[in-house]
Amino acid sequence: QVQVVESGGGLAQPGGSLRLSCAASGRVLTISDMGWYRQAPGEDRELVARITTTGTTTYADSVKGRFTISRDNAKNSVYLQMNSLEFEDTAVYYCFAVDTSSYLGPYDYWGQGTQVTVSS
Image 1 (cartoon, helix red, strand yellow):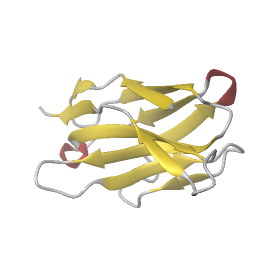
Image 2: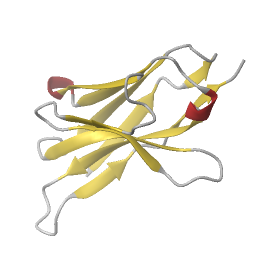
Image 3: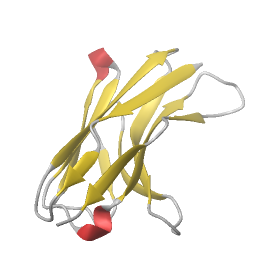
């Protein structure tokens, strides 16, 4: 089992910044990719950013140049620095960690989500 816990959401003004943190615990030795999805009201969950154990990153087009994902493997943690926030960034942000320990294939563990609200 892997437990995933996010922190750092909140309220920001347009153009402002927030930093999300996520820590994995439990069976962490077999975690590969980590990252963030988000889900706005009435919308599907969408990938925001993901990062491999070696630091290769992937971003949604809507956040490129504004958001930066980083990872501390020693702490089993991933971070999302969000700059130049826009109203459209308002959503619940979910951290995920991919566990590769099962012979059945990779399994995604999810955090409980943290609310990010961009409002003036």
